[in-house]
Length: 111
Length: 114
Image 1 (cartoon, rainbow over the protein chains, first blue to last red):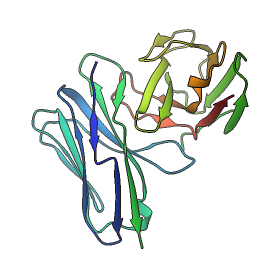
Image 2 (image 1 turned 90 degrees about the horizontal axis):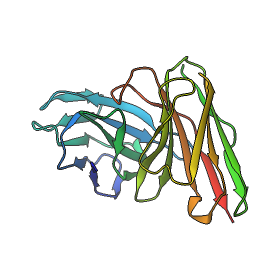
Image 3 (image 1 turned 135 degrees about the vertical axis):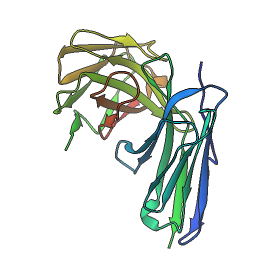
Image 4 (image 1 turned 45 degrees about the horizontal axis):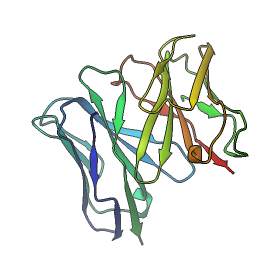
């Protein structure tokens, strides 16, 4: 069974601070997705990374896929209260047709 | 915009009841999924379907069944609800095959089994 471990589980920071969320596995994934979920809503896709070493930027969010395609990170620069939410990573196995989700990181940005 | 709707936002049922959760998507997606979301466990796949009348077990199918009679509708059935099925249930759909396509989620159904 493939597993994705996310850390930290909870993060409470002040507006303007930087943060990094990690997603790690011992398994190789063909691609990795990051979702954000707000209270009372379903997750919404932020980005998909496919190539080992790939870096994608979405405004103040930077996503990186590890060279070996076993891990990923999400870095937020100058966090805003609107970034508050649950961040989920999800890996697509090389041979399967489903996603494996991490447990999520709850981010709270205080103004 | 893709829209995935779920029949109820909140449900309260008694142990032993048969429970139906309905999901409808309006983007003609082939693939549909049912997950449950529990704190500290993330999303776990219950069942998925890649075509009408087709279904495949996910990671935790025990105690659940599904039905897909029409392309836009995917139903999750709890044959005899139990307290350990209290959870948030999320439906999703995607266009591309496999796990590489974007999954579009509904708002979720929070089910409480007493």
